[in-house]
Length: 373
Ligand SMILES: NC(=O)C1=CN([C@@H]2O[C@H](COP(=O)(O)OP(=O)(O)OC[C@H]3O[C@@H](n4cnc5c(N)ncnc54)[C@H](O)[C@@H]3O)[C@@H](O)[C@H]2O)C=CC1
Ligand SMILES: CC(=O)[C@H](N)C(=O)O
Image 1: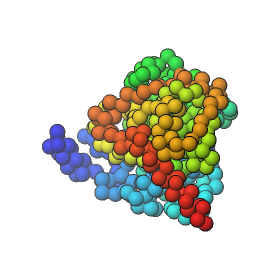
Image 2: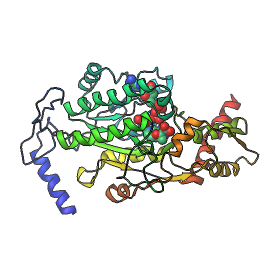
Image 3: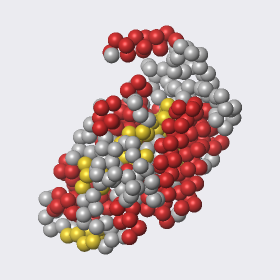
């Protein structure tokens, strides 16, 4: 296996022309990407990226949400500060603005996106812009525009410029008729939120562009993500972040899901690590283009018990939000991520106790600093 991989890498290096960066193939391929917006139906271009010695030039859309800033930090450590550009339609905080390149980008503006990709010689596109499950239900037309029309722009730009494209999906891409415990990669997907529908659409469109146009599309279905230094953007799993802030600030928390609502969750460091790993994985290891990833699964009750080990006087009351509860009841309880583990070696580092300790260490030290000032 290693011999074959080394051999194909050697052939690939010989066949690769220096400035082109096209993926090698015995069959001649077009080096200049052609957008599906522009081409005839027999288009057959291949995506690729950068030569193996170069670092990728990365653009992150929707980068000022819960996940983007952390991802930029990780990628900048690996590829260099100036090779990773954060973008969003919001104004960045000072610390974000001064930590590396930031640019305004509205994913609904195709021409502006194209200009950014061309001017900055982007080779990897990480597409984080989205409206999450709860805010999506509150504004369906906007969710449809950002999550579906915006995605179409991203797919076309990525195909046209031979980018490696990452689009996250979610546990929310499943629905009440999916097997929920556990939920495998391939099963019925009939979500009942605009968020879920748009993510299934993204998975299918990305895979279609991969098979039809050779787009290097990569997708992970994230569980609910828990982070200490960034706020969630309006999802169903947000309670599992808020609980830590309230435990530290007031010792009291009002939970908007029922105590026994079980959902898959993950600490942000694991999520970002998985994203980098799947982006760097050799294409021949990927037997699929969309993978479930998982770390743990818990209910509010179980999370509260773990929190009480750090804050014994912590009190929780339940005031159920019917919209969020209905969404959570239709989502997976446990996620089967065996394919990711088998194909590209996915392995999480944080389980529930580790996550809770890490969150308190971070937030505790922040609040001590705030009190000292
Ligand atoms: N945070 C989580 O628990 C999970 C997140 N994901 C996915 O990961 C990605 C990132 O998630 P988060 O950072 O949590 O989302 P978020 O809601 O915190 O941030 C999304 C960002 O998109 C930006 N945005 C909205 N409209 C835009 C437009 N027209 N053009 C450009 N940017 C626009 C917003 O300003 C915001 O900063 C999303 O695609 C989400 O679906 C998937 C599963 C779980
Ligand atoms: C799991 C997700 O996709 C997100 N956190 C949400 O709750 O909408």
